[in-house]
Amino acid sequence: MALNYQKLMNWPFPAVVRRYSQEDCILIARGFGAGGSPDWAEPDRSFLEPGDALQVLPATAVALADGEFWQMDPRTGIAWQQIVHAQESLRMHRPLACEGELVITQKIDEVFDRGADKGAVMLQTLTLSEPTGKAVASIEVTTLLRGNGGFGGKPQDTPRPAPLPTRQADLVLDIPTPGSPDTLFRLSADIAIAAQTQGKPQAMMRGVGCFGLACRGALRLVCGNDARRLRSFTVRYAGPMYTGETMRLELWQVEPGLALLRMHAVERDQPVLSHGVIEYQD
Image (cartoon, rainbow, N blue to C red; front, side):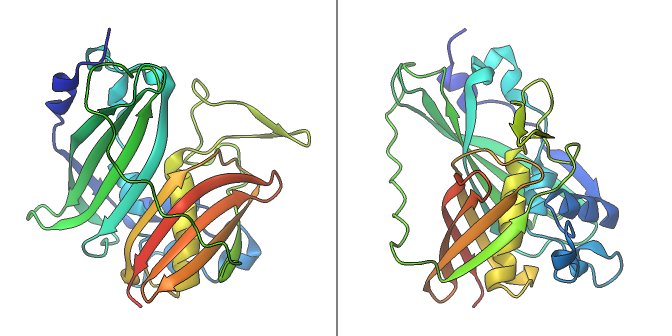
Protein backbone atom coordinates (compact mmCIF):
# COMPACT_ATOMS: atom_id res chain seq x y z
CA MET A 1 0.00 0.00 0.00
CA ALA A 2 1.47 3.36 -1.06
CA LEU A 3 1.84 6.29 1.29
CA ASN A 4 -1.31 8.41 1.40
CA TYR A 5 -0.17 12.00 1.93
CA GLN A 6 -3.56 13.45 2.80
CA LYS A 7 -4.40 10.65 5.19
CA LEU A 8 -1.12 11.16 7.01
CA MET A 9 -1.59 14.93 7.25
CA ASN A 10 -5.03 14.33 8.80
CA TRP A 11 -4.01 11.38 10.99
CA PRO A 12 -6.24 11.40 14.10
CA PHE A 13 -3.80 11.46 16.99
CA PRO A 14 -5.76 11.33 20.26
CA ALA A 15 -4.60 13.45 23.19
CA VAL A 16 -2.85 11.25 25.75
CA VAL A 17 -2.79 11.93 29.49
CA ARG A 18 0.51 10.84 31.04
CA ARG A 19 0.77 10.61 34.82
CA TYR A 20 4.24 10.20 36.23
CA SER A 21 6.00 10.07 39.59
CA GLN A 22 9.40 10.87 41.05
CA GLU A 23 10.24 7.19 40.70
CA ASP A 24 9.50 7.41 36.96
CA CYS A 25 11.82 10.42 36.59
CA ILE A 26 14.61 8.59 38.40
CA LEU A 27 14.12 5.44 36.31
CA ILE A 28 14.30 7.50 33.13
CA ALA A 29 17.44 9.29 34.36
CA ARG A 30 19.08 5.90 34.92
CA GLY A 31 17.99 4.92 31.42
CA PHE A 32 19.94 7.96 30.23
CA GLY A 33 22.98 6.57 32.07
CA ALA A 34 22.78 8.78 35.17
CA GLY A 35 24.85 7.41 38.04
CA GLY A 36 26.24 4.71 35.79
CA SER A 37 29.80 5.03 37.05
CA PRO A 38 31.55 6.23 40.23
CA ASP A 39 32.79 9.35 38.45
CA TRP A 40 29.20 10.38 37.74
CA ALA A 41 27.67 9.52 41.11
CA GLU A 42 28.02 13.00 42.57
CA PRO A 43 27.19 15.05 39.42
CA ASP A 44 24.06 12.95 38.89
CA ARG A 45 22.93 12.92 42.52
CA SER A 46 20.29 15.64 42.06
CA PHE A 47 18.61 13.56 39.32
CA LEU A 48 18.53 10.33 41.32
CA GLU A 49 17.55 11.13 44.91
CA PRO A 50 13.80 11.42 45.58
CA GLY A 51 12.48 14.33 47.58
CA ASP A 52 11.87 18.04 47.30
CA ALA A 53 15.33 18.65 45.79
CA LEU A 54 14.90 16.17 42.91
CA GLN A 55 15.75 17.70 39.53
CA VAL A 56 14.15 16.33 36.37
CA LEU A 57 16.37 15.98 33.32
CA PRO A 58 14.81 18.01 30.47
CA ALA A 59 15.10 15.06 28.08
CA THR A 60 12.62 13.24 30.35
CA ALA A 61 9.99 15.07 28.29
CA VAL A 62 11.02 13.03 25.24
CA ALA A 63 10.70 9.78 27.20
CA LEU A 64 7.29 10.76 28.61
CA ALA A 65 6.04 11.62 25.11
CA ASP A 66 7.21 8.27 23.76
CA GLY A 67 4.11 6.36 22.69
CA GLU A 68 2.90 3.53 20.53
CA PHE A 69 4.56 2.73 17.21
CA TRP A 70 1.64 4.13 15.20
CA GLN A 71 3.62 3.97 11.93
CA MET A 72 3.01 0.20 11.88
CA ASP A 73 -0.69 0.80 11.16
CA PRO A 74 -1.12 -0.42 7.55
CA ARG A 75 -3.53 2.45 6.83
CA THR A 76 -0.60 4.90 6.93
CA GLY A 77 1.04 3.26 3.94
CA ILE A 78 4.39 3.71 5.70
CA ALA A 79 7.01 1.01 5.09
CA TRP A 80 7.78 0.98 8.81
CA GLN A 81 10.60 -1.57 8.47
CA GLN A 82 12.57 1.06 6.54
CA ILE A 83 12.10 4.15 8.69
CA VAL A 84 15.07 5.93 10.27
CA HIS A 85 14.96 8.37 13.20
CA ALA A 86 16.90 11.26 11.64
CA GLN A 87 16.64 14.32 13.90
CA GLU A 88 15.09 15.39 17.21
CA SER A 89 14.64 18.77 18.86
CA LEU A 90 13.41 19.56 22.36
CA ARG A 91 12.32 23.03 23.47
CA MET A 92 11.49 23.67 27.11
CA HIS A 93 8.81 26.28 27.85
CA ARG A 94 9.03 25.71 31.61
CA PRO A 95 10.83 23.17 33.81
CA LEU A 96 9.28 19.74 34.24
CA ALA A 97 7.75 19.08 37.62
CA CYS A 98 9.17 16.01 39.38
CA GLU A 99 5.70 14.40 39.39
CA GLY A 100 2.28 15.18 38.04
CA GLU A 101 0.19 14.92 34.92
CA LEU A 102 0.81 16.00 31.33
CA VAL A 103 -1.38 16.09 28.25
CA ILE A 104 0.47 15.01 25.10
CA THR A 105 -0.74 16.01 21.65
CA GLN A 106 0.95 15.51 18.31
CA LYS A 107 0.54 16.30 14.64
CA ILE A 108 2.32 15.77 11.34
CA ASP A 109 3.62 19.07 10.00
CA GLU A 110 4.75 17.94 6.56
CA VAL A 111 5.90 14.99 4.45
CA PHE A 112 8.48 15.80 1.80
CA ASP A 113 9.10 13.62 -1.26
CA ARG A 114 12.80 13.06 -2.04
CA GLY A 115 12.11 10.72 -4.95
CA ALA A 116 11.56 7.00 -5.39
CA ASP A 117 15.23 6.17 -4.80
CA LYS A 118 15.72 8.46 -1.76
CA GLY A 119 12.51 8.07 0.23
CA ALA A 120 10.42 10.67 2.04
CA VAL A 121 10.97 12.90 5.07
CA MET A 122 8.25 13.30 7.72
CA LEU A 123 8.18 16.16 10.22
CA GLN A 124 6.16 15.81 13.44
CA THR A 125 5.54 18.02 16.46
CA LEU A 126 4.58 16.73 19.92
CA THR A 127 3.50 19.10 22.68
CA LEU A 128 3.46 18.35 26.39
CA SER A 129 1.13 20.61 28.36
CA GLU A 130 -0.17 20.96 31.88
CA PRO A 131 -3.85 20.03 32.33
CA THR A 132 -4.55 23.79 32.43
CA GLY A 133 -3.25 24.08 28.86
CA LYS A 134 0.12 25.73 29.63
CA ALA A 135 2.81 24.29 27.35
CA VAL A 136 5.73 22.62 29.14
CA ALA A 137 7.78 21.28 26.23
CA SER A 138 7.68 20.89 22.45
CA ILE A 139 9.40 18.09 20.55
CA GLU A 140 10.09 18.14 16.81
CA VAL A 141 10.90 14.81 15.19
CA THR A 142 12.28 14.23 11.70
CA THR A 143 11.88 10.71 10.31
CA LEU A 144 13.29 9.36 7.06
CA LEU A 145 10.81 7.05 5.31
CA ARG A 146 13.25 5.20 3.07
CA GLY A 147 10.59 3.03 1.45
CA ASN A 148 8.05 5.76 0.65
CA GLY A 149 9.62 8.13 -1.86
CA GLY A 150 8.02 8.96 -5.19
CA PHE A 151 4.48 9.52 -3.93
CA GLY A 152 4.18 12.83 -5.76
CA GLY A 153 4.65 15.21 -2.84
CA LYS A 154 6.55 18.46 -2.57
CA PRO A 155 10.37 18.30 -2.50
CA GLN A 156 12.25 18.83 0.75
CA ASP A 157 13.00 22.52 1.29
CA THR A 158 14.52 22.49 4.78
CA PRO A 159 17.97 24.12 4.93
CA ARG A 160 21.09 22.11 5.65
CA PRO A 161 22.59 22.63 9.11
CA ALA A 162 25.61 24.86 9.45
CA PRO A 163 28.90 22.93 9.56
CA LEU A 164 30.66 22.46 12.87
CA PRO A 165 33.73 24.64 13.53
CA THR A 166 37.03 23.26 12.23
CA ARG A 167 38.89 24.29 15.39
CA GLN A 168 39.40 22.01 18.37
CA ALA A 169 36.35 21.66 20.58
CA ASP A 170 36.10 24.09 23.51
CA LEU A 171 34.77 21.44 25.90
CA VAL A 172 35.05 17.64 25.80
CA LEU A 173 33.35 15.10 28.06
CA ASP A 174 33.44 11.29 28.08
CA ILE A 175 30.19 9.63 29.17
CA PRO A 176 29.65 5.90 29.82
CA THR A 177 26.48 4.44 28.34
CA PRO A 178 24.30 2.20 30.51
CA GLY A 179 26.15 -1.07 31.06
CA SER A 180 23.28 -3.53 31.18
CA PRO A 181 21.97 -5.06 27.92
CA ASP A 182 18.43 -4.89 29.42
CA THR A 183 18.61 -1.15 30.13
CA LEU A 184 15.40 0.87 29.83
CA PHE A 185 15.93 2.30 26.33
CA ARG A 186 17.36 -0.70 24.51
CA LEU A 187 15.87 -1.61 21.14
CA SER A 188 13.40 -4.48 21.34
CA ALA A 189 14.74 -7.79 20.07
CA ASP A 190 12.45 -7.96 17.03
CA ILE A 191 13.90 -4.81 15.45
CA ALA A 192 17.35 -4.57 17.04
CA ILE A 193 20.54 -5.30 15.16
CA ALA A 194 22.69 -7.63 17.24
CA ALA A 195 26.13 -6.24 18.06
CA GLN A 196 29.28 -7.97 19.20
CA THR A 197 32.29 -6.00 20.46
CA GLN A 198 35.43 -7.82 21.57
CA GLY A 199 33.34 -10.88 22.24
CA LYS A 200 30.96 -9.09 24.61
CA PRO A 201 27.25 -8.99 23.67
CA GLN A 202 25.74 -5.52 23.66
CA ALA A 203 22.30 -4.04 23.05
CA MET A 204 21.60 -1.19 20.67
CA MET A 205 20.05 1.84 22.36
CA ARG A 206 16.94 3.60 21.09
CA GLY A 207 17.17 7.19 19.92
CA VAL A 208 15.48 8.50 23.08
CA GLY A 209 18.23 6.95 25.22
CA CYS A 210 20.95 8.43 23.04
CA PHE A 211 19.27 11.85 23.06
CA GLY A 212 18.89 11.77 26.83
CA LEU A 213 22.49 10.76 27.47
CA ALA A 214 23.85 13.55 25.23
CA CYS A 215 21.50 16.14 26.71
CA ARG A 216 22.59 15.11 30.20
CA GLY A 217 26.24 15.59 29.23
CA ALA A 218 25.62 18.98 27.63
CA LEU A 219 23.71 20.06 30.72
CA ARG A 220 26.80 19.33 32.81
CA LEU A 221 29.17 21.12 30.40
CA VAL A 222 27.36 24.44 29.95
CA CYS A 223 24.51 24.60 32.47
CA GLY A 224 26.28 23.57 35.66
CA ASN A 225 23.82 20.65 35.89
CA ASP A 226 20.97 23.12 36.43
CA ALA A 227 18.05 21.71 34.42
CA ARG A 228 16.22 25.06 34.57
CA ARG A 229 18.85 26.71 32.35
CA LEU A 230 18.20 24.55 29.28
CA ARG A 231 16.15 26.24 26.57
CA SER A 232 16.45 23.80 23.67
CA PHE A 233 18.48 20.81 22.54
CA THR A 234 18.69 19.47 18.97
CA VAL A 235 20.63 16.58 17.44
CA ARG A 236 20.97 14.70 14.18
CA TYR A 237 21.34 10.95 14.55
CA ALA A 238 24.47 9.75 12.75
CA GLY A 239 24.97 6.18 13.98
CA PRO A 240 24.00 3.62 16.63
CA MET A 241 24.83 3.70 20.33
CA TYR A 242 25.29 0.50 22.32
CA THR A 243 25.28 -0.42 25.99
CA GLY A 244 28.63 -0.66 27.74
CA GLU A 245 30.61 1.79 25.61
CA THR A 246 31.97 5.32 25.97
CA MET A 247 30.51 8.39 24.28
CA ARG A 248 32.71 11.44 23.72
CA LEU A 249 30.76 14.70 23.62
CA GLU A 250 32.54 17.61 21.92
CA LEU A 251 31.12 21.11 22.26
CA TRP A 252 31.89 24.46 20.62
CA GLN A 253 30.62 27.69 22.19
CA VAL A 254 29.63 30.11 19.41
CA GLU A 255 27.96 32.89 21.41
CA PRO A 256 26.58 33.43 24.92
CA GLY A 257 23.83 30.88 25.51
CA LEU A 258 24.46 28.95 22.28
CA ALA A 259 26.78 26.02 21.54
CA LEU A 260 27.22 23.37 18.85
CA LEU A 261 28.08 19.75 19.57
CA ARG A 262 28.63 16.25 18.28
CA MET A 263 29.11 12.84 19.89
CA HIS A 264 30.95 9.70 18.84
CA ALA A 265 31.64 6.24 20.22
CA VAL A 266 35.22 6.16 21.55
CA GLU A 267 35.94 2.43 21.33
CA ARG A 268 34.53 2.12 17.80
CA ASP A 269 35.60 5.61 16.70
CA GLN A 270 32.23 6.03 14.97
CA PRO A 271 29.86 9.04 14.87
CA VAL A 272 26.64 8.78 16.88
CA LEU A 273 25.24 12.35 16.87
CA SER A 274 26.10 15.24 14.57
CA HIS A 275 25.14 18.90 14.13
CA GLY A 276 23.84 19.25 17.67
CA VAL A 277 22.71 22.60 19.04
CA ILE A 278 22.07 23.61 22.65
CA GLU A 279 20.47 26.88 23.70
CA TYR A 280 20.67 27.76 27.37
CA GLN A 281 20.45 30.57 29.87
CA ASP A 282 23.97 31.91 30.06
